[in-house]
Image (cartoon, rainbow, N blue to C red; front, side, top):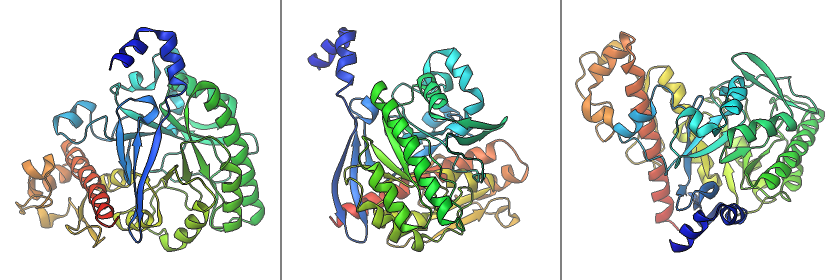
Length: 395
């Protein structure tokens, strides 16, 4: 504590210390058939922060959890800011980046997040289907509400300097349709490696933390080629994209993804975070966790909340990875005075019945999606606690 106080009192010493104060990813072990247990310590120089994995980033739109104010998150005790990673897709803020630059206070202050919150700036919005055919050799396209933005390394660097994000994902060409030709996938890998090297240089010069993106569609040789070229870069983690175009992933065949992922892991450093973004259901998440993925996001929670659905995960998860979705505007729940889930301790289940949630959903009150988001996000966070406990038992 005395050393820390001395460092803080001397700004020059503090800035020099930050150059050597890096995020650490520590793997506790890998349990066959269950996945690996690890922890992320000192996320982006936030001293004392520790996140256990497997876990999920909390998906946001423009820095806010959909339907929930920052104050509400604390009032209902949904989570603590220094215990979860907040995912901020650049596409949800790309139209406003110049305003953040003029604000000069960084992204956390701009969107009202606490100083102790942990940010991960990703490029694409996992809840929105990726538009195909807009990337080129020198830039990747990001779509905001105002339309298309061509994101090259120079513009991306300006945005990163304005945002001051804790950690960011490199630009990539992850537009890999399932029917993409060998030539298209080859270009995708070449462009992604080019963008990643430029972003790695920026991260090195500005002492930033970086996730690179592994692409190549379902072509295993191209995936391995991408991994080999990215493995030499100094990064904190890898994001595995190009297996889907985001949005609704209910049709994603995880069985065809897992063998390719495992071949990728063989060519990447073990002590790096493995991130698989996308709107994945509990069963898909469990299969990918068993393969060795560490980090996911909660865009699935957002999508089912928009459909007025409540997630109920089996009590014996992950040993039984089944789950159900309750359509809360269905008349069958109008006279049901049970909580959404009997064994759930979230604010919604402790204070409201299925009948009341049905009422606010049917009448389209603002409280409807708010209560569903609280419950669904609680179920997702609890689901990962159960996953970590199951892995720990089998180490």
